[in-house]
Length: 56
Ligand SMILES: [Zn+2]
Image (cartoon, rainbow, N blue to C red):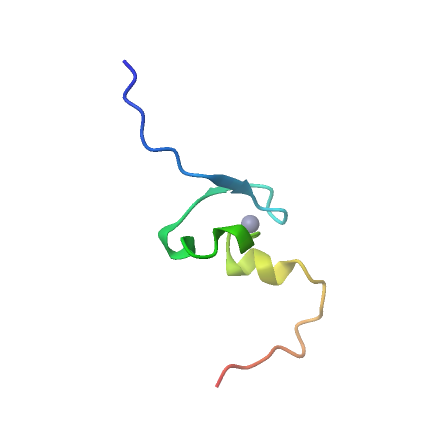
């Protein structure tokens, strides 16, 4: 039986080393997506959390 799901592109997150699959919200920016989540994107820097930008 070869009932395959449509293959979604995957990348490996350089921070948590886990593969993550394409998501709909990235359909326009998949090329630029590097991290699996904002969490990991924020973790790439070792900046101390004292000067976090506050979105107001
Ligand atoms: Zn990650």
